[in-house]
Length: 426
Ligand SMILES: [Mn+2]
Image 1 (tube, helix red, strand yellow):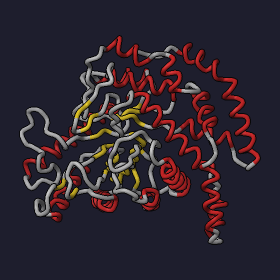
Image 2 (cartoon, helix red, strand yellow):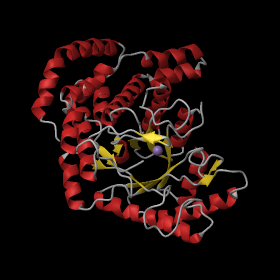
Image 3 (cartoon, rainbow, N blue to C red):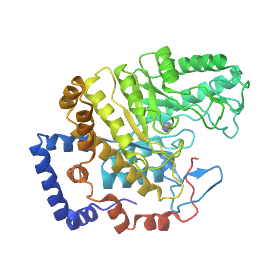
Image 4 (tube, rainbow, N blue to C red):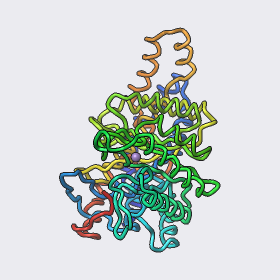
């Protein structure tokens, strides 16, 4: 399914007048505060977030999985779904593939389809957290960290295969997330596990094409519940430094213990030029895979404040690979992704409203109240008309969820694909 451009125009015509009056009011009040509204809208328009190929079907928990019907059953259909989100929001111009769930059978056709939908191939993700059919070795007790060299070699080779697949599609980075760790005290030797991981990562790193990056993700627990080999940003940073200039840390919002100060982690990594990627989601307790901004929108805003600061002040840090990493299990996956994109843009827009010079002056004066006022004034601004404007300028719609429902997209997908399709993934 592809959305007819005329339907987008019709949908916008219905909402244009209201949008314009909201936008004019906001633009006027922001201009009076000295903000460059055009520059903010233009930055919002340029901001693209990758959709992971595993987020297009209903996610599951260890207790069960409830299908949402009309799910994409192959890579072509997954790309079409990303194309639908992108056509409405103009913010999802990239896809992040998970190997081996999404190995293309016809590279030329897949690249043409992606090109037709205006979608780029972002970071490719390897998977050594589950055993694959016909695999010789098992990852039950770890992959890159395993005490068995044969198992480590199989895991290393898989990562190299992922690089080769990504290279044929135009990807420029490999994301490594390791489930490796232990479930019980005494099960692993911490030092051996970390040393093995470092050696394995270095071997993979040597196989990166010249213009590629390696992104090293961390997570404190799950699926292992006593220890994780790459448990925190410090370990990831250490490993990235050990590998070399093209290796970076990747921050996933859900991969922290409760109440971690993620904005400070972002800030420090950027100052060291080592933040390479960012995964969005939200959580109440752990890695809950909830819609971005649904639980802690203020924390997301504070994180964006540091991201914006870093993007403006840390030329030593590369452009970030942005991706939504969520595996929701009760919403329509496409509606959920649209809501996530909206929350990301909202936090970004609010962070762009912060007057960095004024904030710096207040910090130097130790004016704690003023510092908070500056942040909260930006946070309390309803920036939705700016996001609508950015979407409209880019050829998207004023209200993506509303239009998605008005156009009956899920029912069309169910008619096309049936009720029993299951997307590859978790
Ligand atoms: Mn992630």
